[in-house]
Amino acid sequence: MGGASGLAPLSRGGALAPPPAFFTLTEASPGANCNITNGGACISDLNYGNGEWCTFRAEAIISVSATTFDTTSDFDYITIGSTRYDGTSGPSNVVMAAGETITWYSDYATTAGGFV
Image (spheres, rainbow, N blue to C red):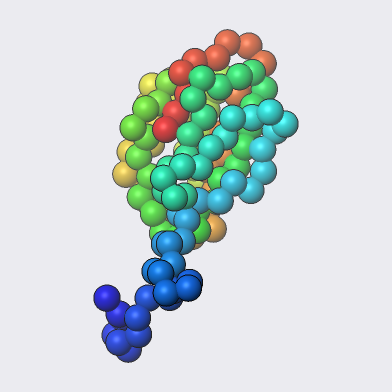
């Protein structure tokens, strides 16, 4: 399992260390339901409320695809780089560099199912 140098993976107390998270939540509005799950590999805000926003930072190069995506078209959206996703058209195989962000925003009117 080691790299080219033959080093073993890092361990804590004899157990293998968990892999690093792909995402970090860097900021969120009070009461926002912005979640990171699956050991940092998945982000979500299901059944979101009005006036929510949050920012997630990629901690490694990662390809991002939404498995569920349902927001209010034109008003509630995710932005990755300069591309905005709303309605039922979520990101699919979007490559993010380490340090890039995903920003989520919902306005103060109608809500929808959210995203994973």
